[in-house]
Image 1: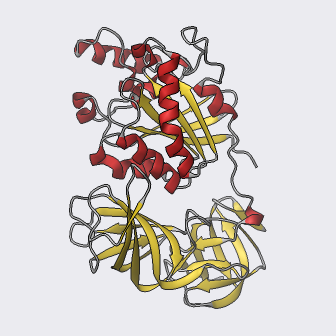
Image 2 (image 1 turned 90 degrees about the vertical axis):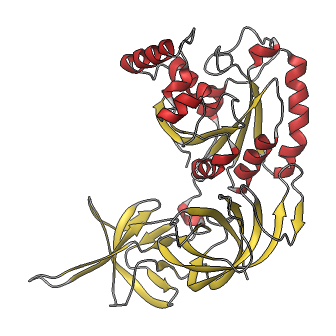
Image 3 (image 1 turned 120 degrees about the vertical axis):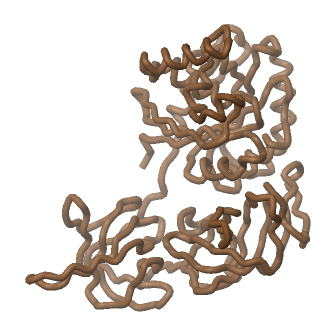
Length: 418
């Protein structure tokens, strides 16, 4: 089934124009309220800008406006007659790569901006690589600030040819190059009279037409991480249910299921929701399951169908994006958050580290530094029920947390059970 809601993110290096692009999308598609526009105009005038700075529509933090950069991920919703959209405006500075990973984690399409004057930068490659690592299926390479290179077709083609070999190595099957000027509005919502040599779609028309679909529930095994156990007594008997969000697939009343990691089998006696009972539930519905047998089921356990169960193990390998200046080393201990399960994880071998400029993997590095991406081995204090990230984004991902500071230090994508 094709989505009528498209989640997409903007990424790229600092000052490539991501916030201005989103501001232009909202403004030219008539999604900005008059009072919002008046406020942005007033702030722009106070700062001495000759024109309205559309980037202020997304750079909402005071620190962002003062510095002229994006720090946090800014989410914006808008719609056209063709589709609804949720935009994640991600920061470009290396210091905030962790926030870019957050914005990319739920995206169906990535827009990576390049400055037509600067061309392909290391951070451009890093963001494209992270998009591919997170298995975002669609990529738009938006070559911005074409107005500053006199809308030169040769400059556009030069950048395309420079970036194309790198994108091809990423394995992204669907990608498109669009020359734009976010400041002037060329090829964002409306076509550009300044670039008659470009015959492709505008950015908005491509976003409206790109085919993005969820996997059909029948093709993906059901995974239901238990978030909360509900027990209610009363004259009519005790109610015991297991609440959470169905991460993938579909569940049916009366269906045989297994509770992992314990491995107990039972059947679903009822599926309850806020709107009443269901015979079938499809991801990503939030619901409460009641089971035929009285089992000891706790938060963090996974209820799934008996066909194609996930891995249940304490040892696995994963690709990790490292977020903090303190390096990751073998033997380090962190808290791990996987679906609704919290545990402790010990880092084993550091298998390799990726050079984001060449995509080559350096074997057995001594550590992972800030913004490094590499493959590591982990052992957890309790067994986890997981899939590989390639199979299931929800049950194949996790975060690592510093137990002393409670700061998120890394995000991981499981590649294999060890």
